[in-house]
Length: 469
Image 1 (tube, rainbow, N blue to C red):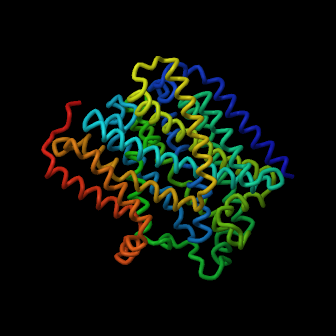
Image 2 (image 1 turned 90 degrees about the vertical axis):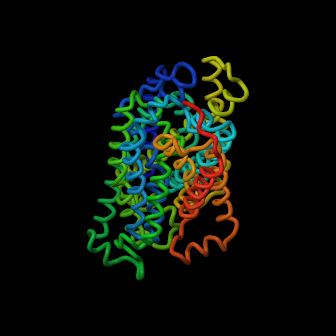
Image 3 (image 1 turned 45 degrees about the horizontal axis):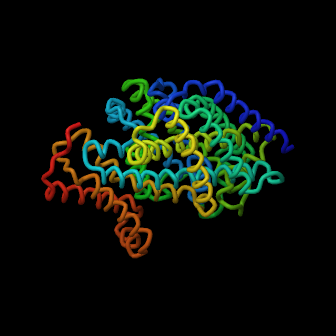
């Protein structure tokens, strides 16, 4: 009966391309029109665009993978994402929209230095490339589980890439926003159906809890460790203030009010998805013991009726496509705005901006696909990569709300030292061992300590005030 889920997924793909084609005229113009939706997104597009960005492979397949081993506490990942989005909506989204910039590195040069912009764009691109590569992995896991006779893991990754790259190339940020309205609806229909029917097959939540493998943490909300959970909240609340693809949503809003309301609404929509996906991961421990943890969610859904399986897996794949599209647009904005236009072609005309933007999307998609082949463990890889955002968040928030203490060297040195701290964490096992011994098991703690200390030292040593805005 694999043809039924296949037809549903194919119809979903056709619908996405129809919407993209119908809205392509909205992206006609230069870089601002194509990569920032002409700064015209209303709040009801900002919210699903942000939700689609948040709820991707890590938030569904990755959370279910973690829940297969760590129980319902894996759902805190999405709760942390939601908290970060709501905080941005309450604190910073209005200010971001009022700045009239395209990227955070652009702000760093405007107020700090050229070196701050260069280092800023390098770190942002590394981060965005890592996150994007994880979407291929999730997409490959979904399609290979959905149609194992048609897709291998690698061919599933390739088809996933073709779909979201095509949507992005044709329609830009407007297409990402409008298709995400469909994506978010399909995501919720999918994961709710999957959780309800999977738990029903076991006999309800009481039977699910009673039949979990011996020693499995099950419904213990703190099983993964409260220090780890706090680390997640620190990571996600840091990330939402400073990852290009996230803040770009506020840059593209119609006005400051739309940016603020869109982020708050988006956070509320994001909140439940992780715990629902975690329930599916828990059900998989009973329905499919002994499988690869990454396939916990897709395999569980595949055991449902063909129509339900098609809807659920189309929803999961929708999550993947929606995240990857926004990430590609964010990465292309960095390349075009902070590299090509800033250093190589400052007088690039509107048509040239559009061509360069599309070429950048294509090249970035190829590079991230090649990287994805070598990556495993979706959630841990993502959470480590997001530690790069500590310095960006600290410098950005200080620039917005306490510029009197900021100095010219802050952007350059705070970014460099926090990046170096993360590299040292990954290279020398003695460092994470020491932090685990003092109950701080995640690199986000080290990165925040280094960022804050660097910021303090630069404030003392450097007496150069910020450039006027």
